[in-house]
Structure formats: C-alpha cells, structure tokens
Amino acid sequence: MSVLLIEAFYGGSHKQLMDLLQEELQEDCVLCTLPAKKWHWKARTAAVYFMQTVPTSTNYRILFASSVLNLAELVALRPDLGKLKKVLYFHENQLAYPVQKCQERDFQYGYNQILSCLVADVVVFNSAFNMESFLTSIGKFMKLIPDHRPKDLEKIIRPKCQVLYFPVRFPDVSREHDKDPETFFKVLLKLKEKELPFHVSVLGEAFTEIPAEYLYSTPEQLFKRLQNFCKRPDTVRRHLYKGETAGFSWAALGGKFRSLLAAEPREDL
Image 1 (cartoon, helix red, strand yellow):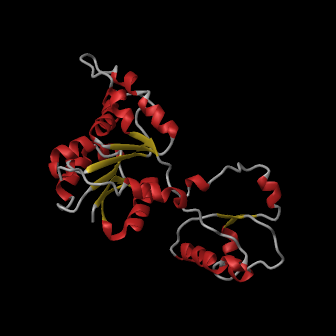
Image 2 (tube, rainbow, N blue to C red):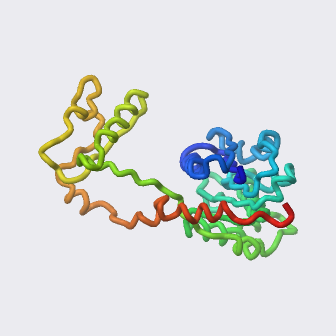
Image 3 (cartoon, rainbow, N blue to C red):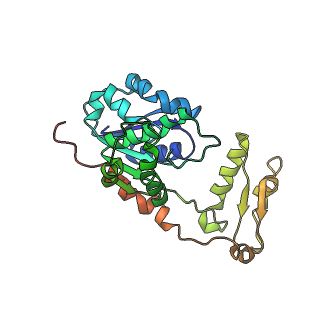
C-alpha cells in the first residue's frame, strides 16, 4: 500500500484513470475519492475532507492526485503526506478553461492549481497543449492580483512538468468467431439488463453469417440499439480520421505510469 491515490472529482476520465491505476497496482495502493458533483465546491473544500478521511500509514511513498484537489492545503493540513513524493495530474487546467463570464471569485480555482504545482514534486499533463496553455498563462493570470504579485512562477514550475497521455484500453470488438463475439454481445445484453443507455456502431467487413441470435432475439432486440450496422466500411473509412492510437494505449503508457508511481522514497521519510 505504498501509493495513495486521491481523486476529489471521481467521475468521467478522472474516475477511469484512478480505476485503471488501482486495478494495475492492486494491493499496493489505496484510493480515496469524493463524488463527481459540484466540482466548484470540491475544488474549494476537498483538502479538509481528505485531511480527516485519508488513513494514516507509514507505508505510503507516493501521493497521486488530480488537479481538482488543492494539494497545497492538504499537505499543510497533513504534514505526514507532505513528506511523500507528490504527483499532480492535469486532466484540464483552469487557466485555459473557457468560462461564460469571468468573475473575481473564479480566480481561486486557477490560483489553487498554481499552488498545487508549487508543492508537487512532479506535475503531469495529459497533452502538450494542456501543459503549455497552463504554463504560458501563469504570468498573465497573476497580473490579476492588484499588487505585490509573485514573480517567475512559470520558471519554478516548468522543470517539474511532463506530458503523459491519458491511457486508454482499446477493446477488440471484432465479430469474427476467433475474436469471441459471444462475449461482446453478452456485454451488450448486460448493459440492456441494467437499463443503461447505449448505442453501438458495428464496422467491418460484412459476411453472410450475422449473429442473428443476439441481434434479433426476443425480448432483447439488440438490433434496435445498433446505431449503424455498416455494410460498406470502406465508405466510412474515407471520412474518418485514421490517426495512430498505439501511443495512447495502456500497453504503451503503462510502463511510464508504473515508473512514475514506483520512484524511490525521499531520504527524510
């Protein structure tokens, strides 16, 4: 249990990443979360909540959290966590996040992220754009302070920063018998059983044998849930972006995440 995972907004991509890391690390980690509701309040108050709820342990070596958490507040409130190697992951950043109307109170969200970067040991962004848009906006953002503005914060934070793409497990949903289509359709049936909304686009070469027992069986009628059953995949491919996805797969990125979360503990632990 050497890795402490903290997610103040446990939903969407934030949840997916934490679940994936927890699955990979298994018994070597502990996960502490807050529900994905009212993110403004989570950004403001999560540190105090985690101060009270994160279990105390002498086994922790690494703290991994998303940038929703005010990391500076947490390590001030829990000095034992401040001694860990602290990794801050940015799914998005508040300095470049679009707002409908700029209000003075919103300054705190971006300011919290800057403070978190200052106390973090490693700052990780899910894209180069995310990283550069944050770092290059710090100077302009700090000019919102009326006077006695801190200086050179970008120079302090940048050396800690790196890009590590969001890892994705790409499923193989081929309909050929050697790719286990039965399991694929069992998953669809389970989704329907739980009354979860879904649409599926089935692409690929059209063969004469279509698994009608799954698609048309009563009462499931999965065919009604198929968004498109493509008979001319060559037409679709001419209009789809065919980018390289291998670099975003867990197979490619898993080793980098493990390395990030397996660094040597600090000497003062």
